[in-house]
Length: 398
Image (cartoon, rainbow, N blue to C red; front, side):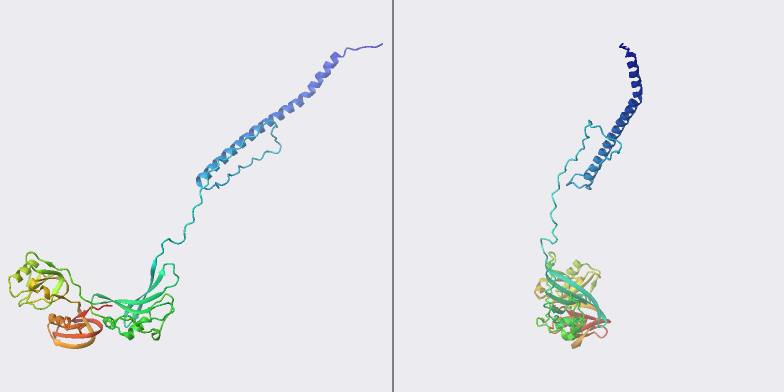
């Protein structure tokens, strides 16, 4: 006999038991899904923060010039935890790419040499030496064709001395080429005499010149200078003259008419205008010299030779204007010159000046105040301090 049992209740019971047994599994799956969702959210936040930091860094680097503008910088890679995976259906997070910046055009190379080259370029070497008991400044010039030339083509050595207030240039030696020996002296004999030298001592002094190539020469190495010029007296400058419209006198400032003083001179404590008026009313007077420092007036019976005097104003009547001569004598007080004396005579100081000025052989004079003695020289070797002597020297060309 076939017995059929109603198994509906049993199946329901079994199904219920199965579902109850699946609850822990479902709970575990839910927990896993929750962890996955949290990890995904964390990864999105970290990636977004990293992108923001990288973008700010790129902007600052570009603004500060620290970023290489030719290639965009790669963003840092965010490492994911090994136990977390992104769901397959999640779209990838886009990474912004920095906008390319315009490349700067390369700057042209700065030229190392100027476009304009200086020609006739000179370099000087200066050296102070003790010679004949005094200090001499030796100046050695070297001529280059241009400022980039490595070798000079000619050189020269000279010194400068002050003689009674006049600067005298003394050419000592010259070299026509770096391989050539010095030739000298170049200064004329009379110029050497003015500064206390002669040919032999000038050559000796030239051996101390400082040449840029470092070469030194003995006196025997210096050859005579074939281009040496002879000295000549320098024509005295002709100053500007003006005519006083009131008196009609020819007026020259800075010059003194020597000699020819009228008796009882000077007239003191007068003005220059009063001095000219006094001369105009005296038929004996043809010219005046007015001393601005002492307000003293010297009326003169003639005017021919004029000498420089910063404190003087000379005024002459038109009748003697054509006789005026301007001397190149330079004067010194408390100074005595030495050399070859060829003429001596007792004279007054103004007459001693006139005697030397009118004699072409005379290069200078001494006037000894105590004896009223005038000594003329046709060569001069040196000068020295002497309170009892006044002297004068004719300036010469160099």
